[in-house]
Image (cartoon, rainbow, N blue to C red):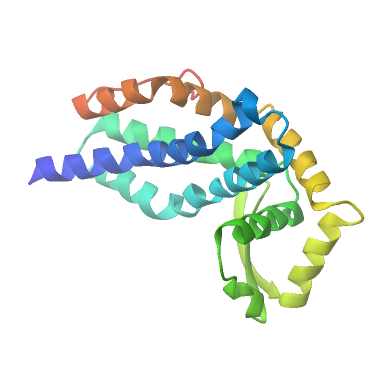
Length: 211
């Protein structure tokens, strides 16, 4: 029974790293491959999806991440407890990176991303819109009137075109000096080593995570 619990916690914590990396790997090729160098509109769409994907793990931090951390402590598995804390540090780096954008810009990016991937935008028909953004390293969730939401989108675009705004956001995102990028690149290189170490009950020390 304990082996089942250990496997559950191990695979769960691993997915905290893997799932975000997998999403980024699926889209990152369009930012890096030479054949897409002259496709700024495509790159802008990819960046909107990538930036929005940072919100997903942050939303689960107080749920799944803390759940795995508590289970690792209860099982007295120090290496898994450490991996959970490393994931927590990774999530915080995502919050810090998102904090480089204003709340209005984050709402705009999410709105654009939703237009790309949803065939029906239910929120468009609600009197109150749920918005999520990170400010000063912390996640904020609140409902605002639909008119206020629409005004945010109009304000961010201003007199510019959609792609002009997105190009600026993309440049700031990819050019940011952030711990997120250091951890992400290290994770790209060492994903299999990390997985093997976790499954074998060993620790893996990220150079970019001081834990």
